Length: 460
Image (cartoon, rainbow, N blue to C red; front, top):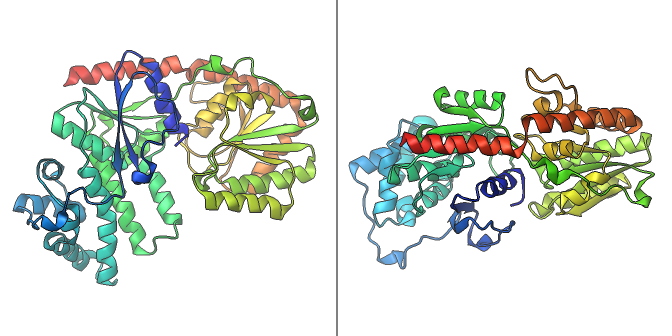
């Protein structure tokens, strides 16, 4: 997918041309195999895939006799399901060194007995058959990940916890090589927010799914040599979720500022408009609906406003259609969905940019806006406050306006305030440009990770 994290991965790989990278990508199923959203850099020598939904990879599982788990294996699997201290190494060896059928394991007596014990202990108030099948659906993707063959490497670098963290933990167990875990958002918290709002899971099952992601994060933190985050508050959240403080490092994002110099400006038709750019994926987590509603209110006050929503619309086609319908039902004009674009062709034509997400890490789109001298309106998520107002010791000033999540009135008022005041837009845009140059250049990020790679290599 195109996005902040994948863009960061792409820039990281390009920042180390002398390093050889192999990518192990987690995708939903084989239908998405090989569909790359980026041109692979020359120093990417292989791409492997792991699937969260797949058939059992045994030639004819009907001929595979259902083997029972050993006591050690049974105890390890039981401890994962019941949320106890787990000997993950036993499970890594089980899935990597033995011919095991995932189908037989999920449908077999051992898993049934473990789930039954978990049910009797914690969930006896709900229907057992529903609980059993939910547990099978939860553990199918985990078992498929555990069954993934991992390529050998000198260093493993996961860009999230969750299933990626499981792969990282398994790699460092199997090959005794160092592991770095980098989180842009706090993966467990993002999944928690997602699950709490989801319609496909209800009641106590939300808690079970959330606990599963917490277990995987704990494994990743425990296996890693170094765990990075983008800003101070994220580091505190990692520690709250069980990451030892001694492992944590803050590594801010960085961009190539020079890429956003001499951008094309407005054409003749656009000179009469105040143009607002939103660089995002049209998905619920970006809260595009609130953006559209706020813009409709602002446009009633400032009729010469125009909104460009720049980014892919095919990741959640149902949500994208709801956004199109909202524009139509509100009768609001001058909302333009561009689809996936080269942002450098548009950013110079904007008077400001906006991000109304309900969850973020340290958005690259804000850094790119700063590099283009554009002020930013952003919701108070992730590192947006620090980017707009500066971290402790940064006295450069305000580079935009911060609003509360889903607060249509605040967001609308921020649009109007900047639209009415060209001098304020210029002042804030210049502050953003100074801030990105002083703290968020790609050279700083590259030097930090070069130091981390050297450090973990010496450690093991």
